[in-house]
Image (cartoon, rainbow, N blue to C red; front, top):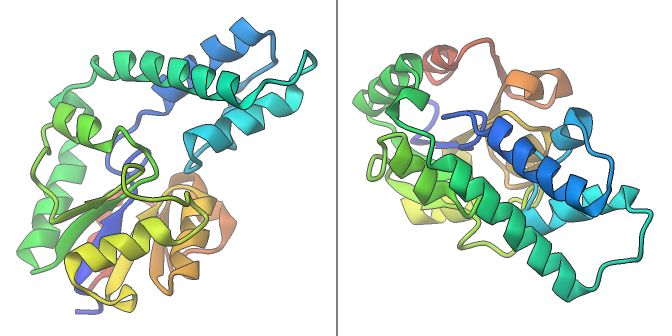
Length: 213
């Protein structure tokens, strides 16, 4: 085997919560009178909550927000987002993803999550994978969000492995940059394929089975 473990981003890889993020950020932007669309929303993928807010505030034409106001609005956005996540269920975990994860585990690979989201435990619980992964590194245990490699390096640490023994699966350019910065190979899926940074480019999630052989 080329690797001993696979570290997955969560949003956009294991499941898709983009629409919930978008609707929550859009509601906040509308409240603040700031233009926001799906193109801007794409810039927020793999980025921390506070950094995402800063990107949105680039178009702010009103009075600058204080640090306290920024924390308040970021919290408000997250409350809206978490409320919408309660709509998620096991139906949001595709048969292809679950089948592929099971086959990877049967091959002897350890599986981990490497996500900047602080809501990773909630999402995993909603889609029926609360205790499935061998390790979870997320926004609750890191200080630096992607493209900093911390979230993936901690995942490797929790697994008891060296970074080079792990393959990262990502759908965002920032995530691929984080993996590379951490000395890890990476498999690009979705929009991340066009970045040209992936060690492997996956057309489907199941293609991962071939990549790790």
